[in-house]
Amino acid sequence: MAQQDYYKSLGLSKGASADEIKKAYRKLAVKYHPDKNLGDKAAEERFKEINEAYAVLSDPQKKAQYDQFGSSGFHQRFSQEDIFRGFNVDDLFKDKGFGTDDIFSRIFGGAGGFQQREGRGFGTRRQRGEDFEMEIKVTFLEAYHGGEKRVAFAKDGQREELMVKIPPGVGSGARLRLKGKGGEGVGGGPAGDIYLTITVGGDPQFTREGDDILTDHVIRFSEAAMGCSLDVPTPEGTKRIKVPAGIQPGTRIRLKGLGFSHMGSAGKGDLYVRIGVRVPESLSADQRRLLEELAGKGL
Image (cartoon, rainbow, N blue to C red):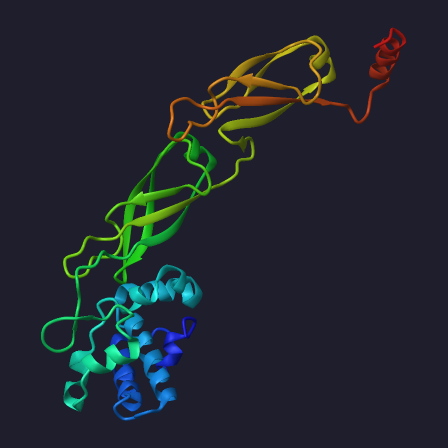
């Protein structure tokens, strides 16, 4: 039942209006109401499906989440109690002479978020609002420097936007909490939170290794043999480094403190320039002659 298609349960297609959803629910709920189908377990199960579908599709916030994430994604975010929290159908059955207190208590067993109150029908107790889970993608340099990023999401069927502070040094998989920005509380309860899971994109120049950064730079054989100075890119801008004579391919030159900020503590990682040596694919006659002379001298 958890993976049912709520629109199909009500005989509707996605995009049905609130009025169409209400009419379809009322018609089916009356048809399969246990008071009209005493002892019919199949009708009781159908009645449960119909009510679960209506509990979601009649709530703009839940409906928006269901439409966005589908059945599987929705049920990862909403428990059975979440689905029925605040659900009230008392007025829909008044003219049919059906009671709701006893029937819902019996078939749902007090679970599913139905809460009794004084008088008829179902009220709500003070409940904290829903937490929302979202993913946010940031670039490599946004994760390095930190800053602010605009995030759009659906809340109560409406598009909302927030500016989110990205802490410097954040990595993929980190979760940011936006307190009180989730679903509205029920019965005066506090609002829920939004949790953002970070995904950091790659970069054509840099590779992240923990809080360290690696970049590659290729030099000529003569530069490797005699040493040289290089201008290399870093997230802070171009830096000039010295390459010692005789450096071997794969050697890393460390630039201290130019890596990512340590999350939760002071300091930063380092940036490493990994040196490669370019071997020419072809040689001119003069180059070959000179290399042969050097080879003859033991180089």
